[in-house]
Length: 278
Length: 323
Ligand SMILES: Cc1cc2nc3c(=O)[nH]c(=O)nc-3n(C[C@H](O)[C@H](O)[C@H](O)COP(=O)(O)OP(=O)(O)OC[C@H]3O[C@@H](n4cnc5c(N)ncnc54)[C@H](O)[C@@H]3O)c2cc1C
Ligand SMILES: Cc1cc2nc3c(=O)[nH]c(=O)nc-3n(C[C@H](O)[C@H](O)[C@H](O)COP(=O)(O)O)c2cc1C
Image: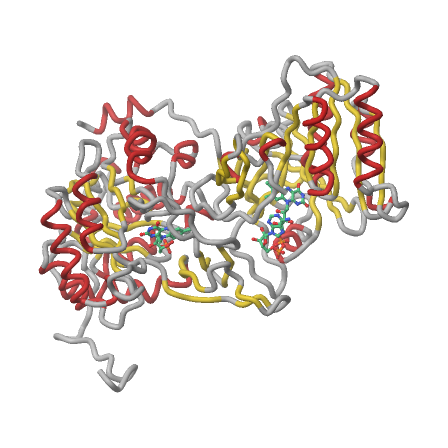
């Protein structure tokens, strides 16, 4: 084979996952723990879907080293302006490095990665149940649901009321927001179950979309089973490559009674809620 | 030469253990899968190398399976394997679409197991067998075959008898005498030696006082190991006449050039793809640019071109008085 026909055969080859340097256009503190980051990027990155994620190559904070990229969910995406948003918690070395980025700096991001949420055409109303960083993952669903005329009730959980996030974002997309917190003793499984049962009885919950709490996962699995509803869950696991190469982020799933190991980064991070094992 | 060479004038091809490769850059086993096909065109690579497969169905190691280390990664993934029929029916077809030759990495608990697996996988679509003899095995009391020249000799001989495909053996850097192991592999019929696998290591979590990895110990890879493995490639390339494929911490074309100069005929890139998914194609482009800039018309001219002033043996006696 000569190199010319190689070129002609592959000239139109285009990547669907890219690593690129994106420009920081906004970076603000949401509260003591969380930061909201907006970057300008290329078309591929700006085509990310709700539930997908990026692998961020975090700058090194002074005196510390990270080696791997860090996975972050898409918190928002604007294909027209080629922007992607993240909502992240400053947790350790990687996110401390992210926190040092200023407007005008660049961030090496890779994506979009993984399998996002699926909104079946038959859905009329969904319940979104999230806690902690899980809210970041679930937030883009609100806009997607609005575009499809699907009603959303979002149950947002946090330790304290001042740590609740994204209420306005959900509301701006027409979602009804119910907040529950540990400090007000409203976030326990029993209360969330009560809220969900009420939604189901009013025919306002055809499916569950959840992230960030195994206790609440179990409640939703039980209700889904009882009422024959469906659900999807976005899962987290420590990752290395983020594109299914290394098998470091595996989790066990119950697939029709059989325990199956799947890669969170490649087979997920969004999975059928009924297959998830807490 | 006055005018700058054009890219077309650089011959990037190399001949490795029975295969002619478009260029000397290929993935390292266990760090390559279909996900990268969304990042670059696989036909740009010199070869494709699969994750090690075993006949036995294996779950892999307990989590956590990786931990970061300065300029490196310690992994104890284990070898999760869905067995041979799954590989032939579900994995092999994914790679059939590409012109780049497919190298299949195999492992087994015994020398006989290696041989029978190599025989079963000597089928159309497989261009070469890479025997990962750097993993713990039953016969050698949990030690990797490649820890000793004798065990390497035995398993390589049986593999050689079992397959007509080009046979590459992948050595471990955890032995004290890697050049002797490489000689044993050459003497018993290997067509190339891959130098090397990960370096046995450990990390401890100071919050919990527990090992950071579920498997307690793991293998270090990435830039941290490059100087060590580069030295081993140099030693092996001097000791044997079959090609050496360098593998350890390569993340840039400069790293690849160092390996070629040390005597590697080709290189494998592993952990770098976790940080920059297009690392391999970037290395290929930059390697070509290096050749143009240095007016080197064939990349193979770099192989073993390191200039060492000493007449014969390099003196390492000051490092270890026993030698
Ligand atoms: C698909 C996915 C999406 C995510 N989306 C978000 C998000 O939108 N917002 C957000 O705040 N966080 C999110 N996380 C968690 C986030 O990746 C971790 O908080 C982050 O990696 C911590 O890195 P660090 O260096 O700051 O902390 P360290 O504790 O120093 O990290 C050490 C190691 O543990 C890993 N790690 C630590 N915590 C987690 C975790 N919860 N999940 C997975 N790996 C972890 C790190 O990646 C790193 O390898 C997501 C995780 C996954 C897997
Ligand atoms: C996550 C991971 C999985 C690996 N799996 C295998 C494997 O299945 N078989 C094998 O021969 N080597 C395996 N290796 C070793 C690599 O092929 C390579 O020899 C080693 O990582 C050194 O190269 P690097 O520094 O470029 O990563 C693995 C390495 C990593 C990091």
